[in-house]
Structures are given as C-alpha cells and as structure tokens.
Length: 158
Image (cartoon, rainbow, N blue to C red; front, side):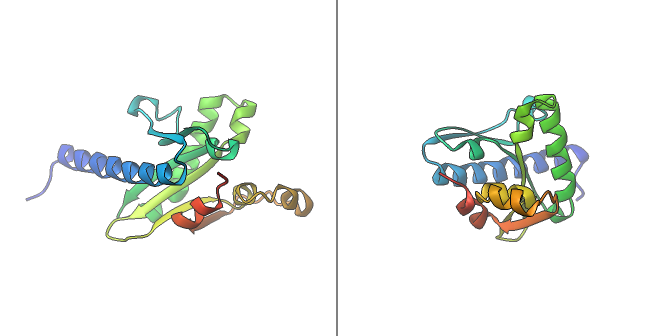
C-alpha cells in the first residue's frame, strides 16, 4: 500500500530527528563539557541543525552543522552546503561573525553504516590549525572535502 504525502513527510521528519539525536550524542561524547542541542524547527534559518555551545574552542563553537540522511543524501550535499552559506548570511547579516562560521554537512546514506562530514578545503585547513599554511600557500579553495565523521571529530580542537 502506498503512503500518503503526509505519511512520507512524517517518516522523513522522524528519520531526520533520529539522525540529529545520534549525531548530538556523538558530539556530547567528543565534547563532554559542551552543551549540544538541536535547533528549534522555527529557528532553522538562523541556527544550524545542531548547536555546540559552552566549554569548547572558538573554532568548534563556530561550526555551522547541517545534517541530512536518506537514500540519496550523497546527491544533495552540495545543496545543503549552499543552504548553510545562505543561512549563515541570513543569521549574521554579513557581520564579522558570519565570516567566522564554518559550514559542515554531516550526512548518511540509508542502509549504510558510515557517516560523513563534508566541508571546504579552506575550512579543513582552518580546523586543522594550518592557518599559516593557508596564508603561505594562498589556499582559498572552496572545493569540497569529505571525511569519515570520526576523522572529522578527531581533527577538532578540544
């Protein structure tokens, strides 16, 4: 029996909420002194899907995390990255704060175990503490880089 649009929407929201809760748990394990929370649905254009606050480095608190899960999640990573850039601009109205935000798409394909994190090459250098290398080599590349989520979390400073 085919599902109605309403049933499909409810199922998609449930999968999304479950994925966000899973990633929030992983972030709480990685940053036990931080507060990790899901954004309210009504604040999604002004906050990332998951917010990390409190006792964490400035770099970590500046992450703008967009999450997606589904059978075709890998096909919409670029769209989610664009959404993150739009939301950052909207939330900070081109302030200095917006320039510090680091958009990251955390994604998962249904029926697969691996979770991925995609960010720009430039932001990967920033997270890895290689700002001097960026300045020396002149890397301003926005090319996407995808890492296993565990590797991405290991890169982040405490």
